[in-house]
Image 1: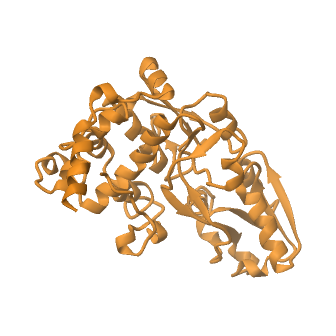
Image 2: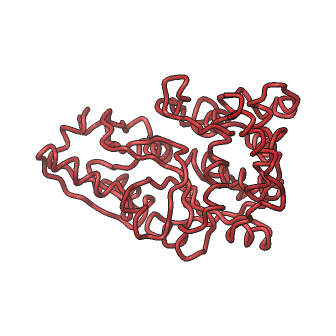
Image 3: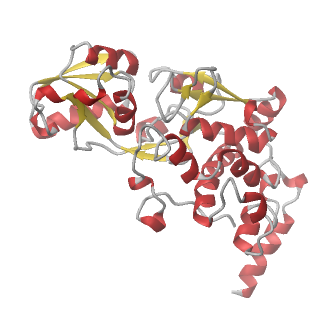
Length: 338
């Protein structure tokens, strides 16, 4: 055991700036002076512009964290709003560097499209919203219903699979964007509207009379969401993946936006390594060794970001559910920083 511990310490000490591998994408970002992130045109809680035009949200924090890790400046993050149909094409074509935009990790997307999923930052599932006057309290009672759905999303196939599995008929009304689908639904074009449950909670707030609508209890799919990168650049992939992991690990270790500067002084070897006081893991990824400190000081840990945009401090008031830490019965789990 002692030999193994010594081996880890020696490995960490041996990583020098000369060994740092600045990836092609990261090198271009540094030369350009900012990181370009794809985002949705506007989903409350995840990515939306305020009255001053500044982007905010749970997914936006991922991009700001990357900007801080690279430049020590969250405003070095630039945002490109993309529809569901265009988001992966924009990433493939190099219009953006990373796509932290409510995009589900699926096998077909990960094969042959030139894009790679990095890490789950939100576990979601698809559901249905209906008008209360319809008198429907379960998705199992939607037989024969018309359902508004956005094109270019996993929601279309999930919708077909669900009704086929239950042997029910339905009419799908597919629209080019989520906004168009919602507008059509509110105008009475469809009996139900379907998308991820977190998005249903967000769009429900946009409706003229939110209390007139209900989100049905059934969750009909698994929707692991998180940032995507282009395939073939392992260095950039690693930085994005470990940035998401850093937010989760910080919450687990009790490192917060308020105490991170003090936690740097900790004698706990795990925290010292995590915050860059031991080893040169940041430099090995092409950023400074205090990259995690920078990130947490700017956007906070995973729980703080969740609470701010999706949880108790937000209008959505979503429960953590599967997005709670693994130590609290959830699925959020960071690989070890060692």
